[in-house]
Image 1 (cartoon, rainbow, N blue to C red):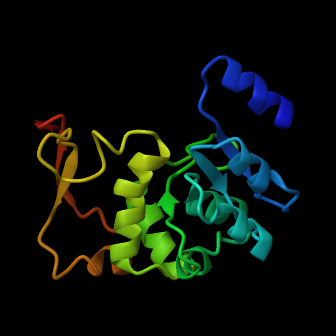
Image 2 (cartoon, rainbow, N blue to C red; image 1 turned 120 degrees about the horizontal axis):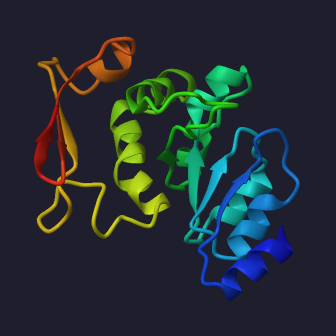
Length: 182
């Protein structure tokens, strides 16, 4: 990993590292040392892993639909947030371990299985997710000057309903680059 990250830097590549899916062997510390944009998976975390991420620019990313599909432990999202770290959510859309790109399911699963509040899960899927992709200056929040990519839900009683109704399609309208898409 050290060699790959060092060589990548020579070609101006920004590291994003998949690590700690099944065990912890120092990958997070190495990723942070190389200023990785994100460390993704994190189903297995030690206290040393959490400490390594503190005071770094590396975003922890959980992939809860992977845990669901493979029947492996979920990233300890509550522990990550309670330790003072940010958290992003993603699908890891992968035919071998996560053949779904359904972010509604990811947000709901993060609440149900990782103990995030709906507000934390939405934040993790939007602004923190944009950061984990290197897009937070232009995407991830409804802000003047940012790209207008957003969804409008069907009428719901509160955003707390999103994880509660995890099997329901609550999306009414999708807007990409300020234009409604069908």
